[in-house]
Amino acid sequence: MTEEVEIKEGLQGVYIAKSSISKVNGEEGKLYYRGYKIEDLAEKSTYEEVCYLILYGKLPNSKELDSFSNELKKERILSDETIEIIKRMSKKAHVLDTLRTAMSSISADDPEPYSSEEEKNVHKAVKIIAKTATISAAIGRVRKGKDIIPPDDSLGHAKNFLYMLTGEKPDNKKAKLMDVMFILHAEHSSNASTFAALVACSTLADIYSAVVAGEAALKGPLHGGADEAAVKMMQAIGEPGNTEKYINEVLASKEKIMGFGHRVYKAYDPRARILKKYLDEIDGNGEEEVNKLVKIALNTEKIMVDRLGKSHGIWPNVDFFAGPLYMHLGIEPELFDVIFSSSRTVGWCAHVIEYWRNNKLFRPLEEYDGALDLEYKPINER
Ligand SMILES: CC(C)(COP(=O)(O)OP(=O)(O)OC[C@H]1O[C@@H](n2cnc3c(N)ncnc32)[C@H](O)[C@@H]1OP(=O)(O)O)[C@@H](O)C(=O)NCCC(=O)NCCS
Image (cartoon, rainbow, N blue to C red; front, side, top):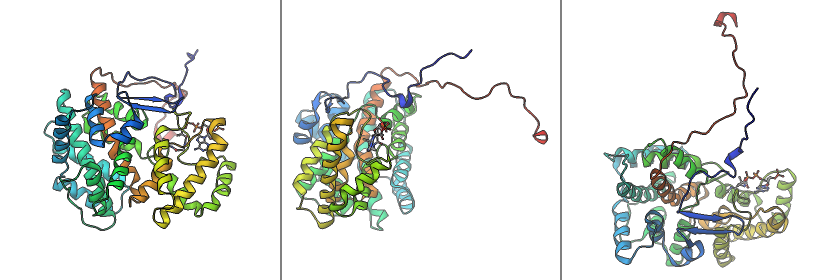
């Protein structure tokens, strides 16, 4: 007789660890990093400060922030080998495949990729965060046949990123929006990519391998790929007046509207709420293509919230509004995944460092439902 087991598909509702990094309150639509409200961090903080907060568990004083920001700047440079990988892969490969491979090459430059010392791992995390941004911008340049732009140490993280990507130093408004995008994507508890990073690190693989595992899991449209899929849907809608018809057809065919729904949030995603304000500001004030996408996004949001919001708990998530905002910053949809990934490296690294304090190898079970004791026949008898 086989034993009755309960299978939790997709590990839904399963707790895997204790963590003090972020709190997602899905019922009320609230998000905290280390106890601080996401709304306050998006409005008043910077990505550098948020990275410090996530890694060290407290807000820095000005001396600590200066030293942390300087370390980030020092680590922005890439080796010739990493640049070569980006140049070779970028023209054909998916951006996340290039990012993953370039990330693997960074561990090759570290004489001690695995360390059990927390302080050393925090410095590796800083290196990973800084270099991922440079890699992401370089991928964006090479894909377009443009020269890679080296980092500018006079600029903060977000401004420097846009400069390395577009070749232009952004105004303060655009730099703030980029910074907010980095902050909102920095951390989100044990989502699929963070869990993948934890599975890798639980074998005591090094922090670089864990980040590569996170990048691999982020690629799919059910996770990091949703912002690109959402903007492509808006482009397919084409004109704001087509929105309702398009949504009706998708829902009638039982397909999903990308950028809506969430495993944990059954209320409005607080990050989407913050981004909607930026979208409202841009509405009618951006370039022609962006204005159209913004209108389509706002129409879609209204229709979907009316139909599936309160009744089904399906609300816009952070990925829905991210796309038109990235486009406003001059970032093409094919690059969204690497930017999400750049922002999230800090979350992955913080979780790895935290998990190692009380490491336990992940090894779940499967209920076997195949045959047993079959007779092995030699190949000429089959
Ligand atoms: C995020 C997501 C994977 C969560 O999924 P989940 O918790 O596994 O829930 P399910 O996919 O089983 O969806 C539950 C129900 O809601 C519906 N639903 C979920 N998201 C929907 C969407 N975006 N559009 C329309 N219906 C949706 C499903 O069709 C399903 O309906 P059913 O019970 O009648 O079959 C899912 O909402 C989704 O695929 N969203 C689109 C992709 C996306 O935006 N991902 C980014 C997440 S940050």
